[in-house]
Amino acid sequence: MREKKVRGMKRKTQQIIKEMNANTQSFPENVSDYWHLPLPAAYDFMTSNRTPKKIKRLCIQTLLNRAEHLIDLKPNDGEYIVSWSQSICLDYGIHKSLCLKGILM
Image (cartoon, rainbow, N blue to C red; front, side, top):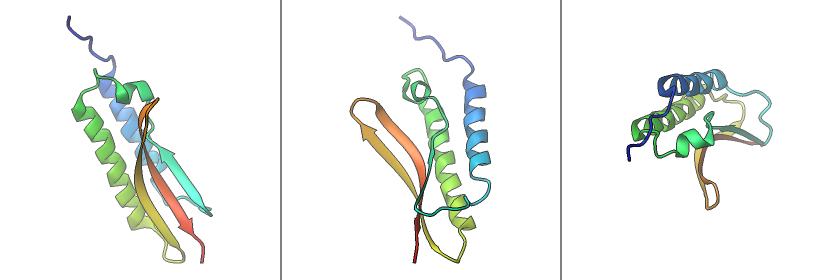
């Protein structure tokens, strides 16, 4: 049997990219220990077999581009580590997020 299309694919994808750009427009203030930005997408949308790999790849590439953008905005007064993490949970699948860790010296 044929699989149904995901409704509003273009709108959902554009909203995810828009939120990622808005949340990483400037370097986060008051990063004392840890700053975390999860992928702003519904879990079911990203793990669905009906969501094309092209859309998933675009979301992950945008997340990586925003991590690079934060690295460029990183202030010189302290040391910060900007990283991209992917955790795999057996019960819930794969979670992707952008993490920022501040090292106080």
